[in-house]
Image 1 (cartoon, rainbow, N blue to C red):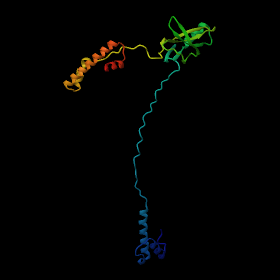
Image 2: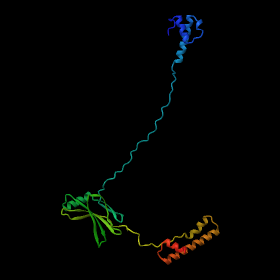
Image 3: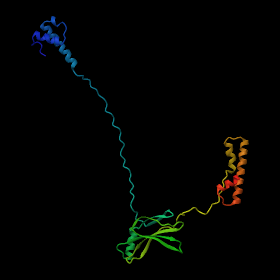
Image 4: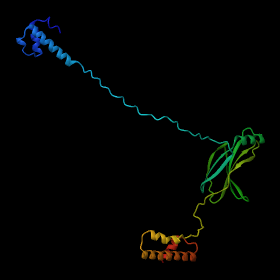
Length: 249
């Protein structure tokens, strides 16, 4: 601000505004000097702080190297002649099969067939008596569920092809399997009672019991072992619950 170009009255009013002390007793030059000093003081205080604040940039988290997951390709087929029959329960069977291209082409050439027709069959019985239980037209490979109630019977599956005249020719057959029974078995296995034998005394000793307690337990174990053996030998194929009841009697 150009104080020297201002009148004394203007300087005085300005000094009142800035609350300069002893302004009424000052001459024009003294007012100019006081206002100039005030201006420098204010200007210095108003300067923005030039201190530079610096900080380290946060470290970026280390990213793990991307490793692509190894994918395993599962083909629809393996081009191998295969047929398997698996029992699900006494009234359901699962069959999966595949006819290789080489085998299919060989049959087509042998029987002069352009469009091969594949037939899946299920058989039951023994060598002397065989019966066909199911027959269905299928593709070169696939799987199928059959609802054939055959508890306790031997079953197997075949995959074959029809020639140009409609005759069936077997390509591959599964192993014969025994279907599960639909009730509890009539056979009762003889139960074998297991005893600790010569190690029982060592077990009692390691348990920390007294010699008197050990002798009582050994006597009790021998008695029960002999009792069960006697009852089992007398009654034959008994269940454990029956033996326990007789032992209690």
